Amino acid sequence: MSTIFTLFMVLIMIACVLLIIIIMAQNPKGGGLSGTFGGTSSAQFGVQRTNDFMEKATWTLGAIIIALILLSVILTGKPVQNFQTTPAKKEAPAPQTAPATNNKTTVPATPAPAGK
Image: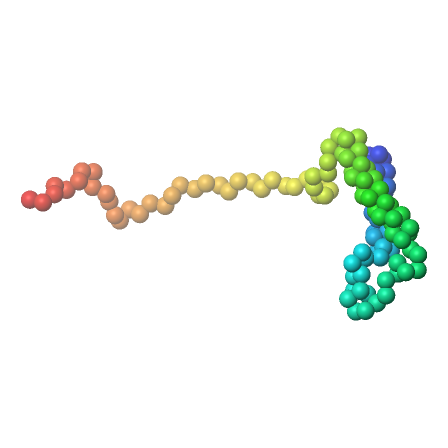
């Protein structure tokens, strides 16, 4: 693999980990499980600005990941199609044998006359 591709892969992984952290840190808008079981909303304590930042960070990191993936495909020339490190061996075709013939039965060359 080229070093450019490796660099892009590392950057994509870092962006993905950051996206996971940002998503896990967000408060659910509908209350989530805490709202279902009678938990209090944290919006009372003034974290509305934090939610705006988290939402913008989520969309930004998502866009960065997509851009990095597209750039890695464009700059490396082709996408990774399979992860095999060794080429697959082609199987040799099975030898074809002549079909077995049964010498006991013979087929008449001319059909028997019908209905006399």
